[in-house]
Image (cartoon, rainbow, N blue to C red; front, side, top):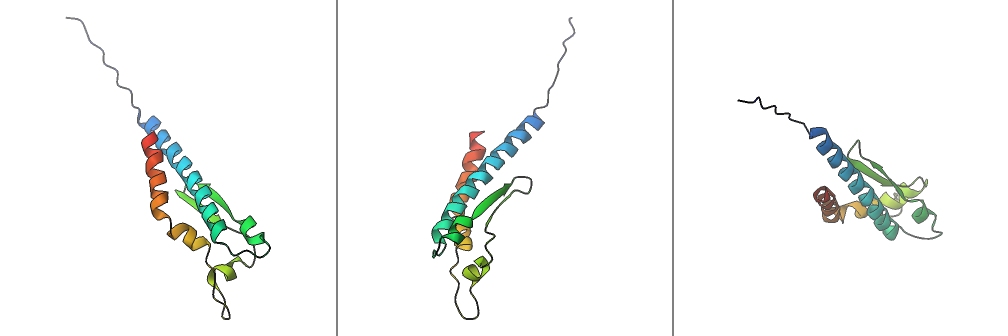
Length: 111
């Protein structure tokens, strides 16, 4: 009887890499979409606040950050003692959670 040699090859790392790539794509897409929503919600006088809104995907953290470096942004978002805020970042996230979930699911299924 002939000897049969069986060789097993693990594809675990390849699967992990594909998942990580899908998550990175999803986070970048979510960042772009959330940034667009935040710009739409932002109050506009000169356009400085709206134009300063950006995003950064952090795949290693499983997160995406949207924000601005404009010094008066917190007062617009949260208000002051004398004036109510006009939230633009929170609604950009909170009002679209189902859409962001669908983006992740779609990217994961495409792999």
